[in-house]
Length: 198
Image (cartoon, rainbow, N blue to C red; front, side, top):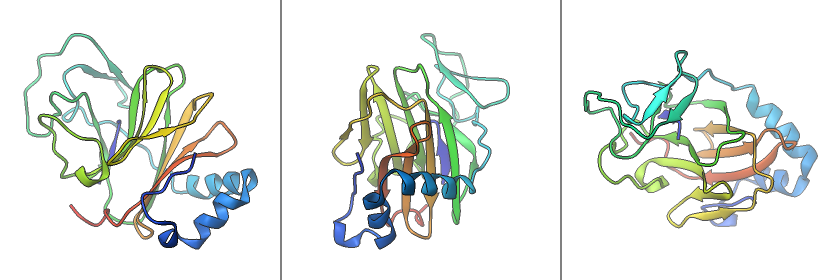
């Protein structure tokens, strides 16, 4: 799986949610702060992959930032490159264990971020939802936050996050998103049995 630079909600019935997660949600701010500290120990360094970047995306020289421009660059349409969806993947990929990364979103009015399977579709219309290999949250129009599920889930994030943390745990089959600057506010949790597939 590659890293994509792209209220609590569940995609599974509550009876299937791990007990530790139920305790975390019930425990409040202190437990969220402790949970964020725990997942941050799995931090990885993410570099964006220029071979996957849509032609309207500019990557910084160090591969750590991405910018959307109005004019498409003239780039080869290789199989890895996204088109027409303006996406880019990270160079790093993982198929087991746990990992965590943070994305600075302060001052941005539109973004999508999360994780994706290596085998995702990269050409044509690309639904950003778990059944198509994407686990993402988005901001549109400066104030519309959503978790991309089969049916988009509106998220009440006011004020919005300045930095978003993303944690993947293959053993538990979950992807979680955190508002890092808001005392570890939990943004959204995807609980799935998806990660082992290619």
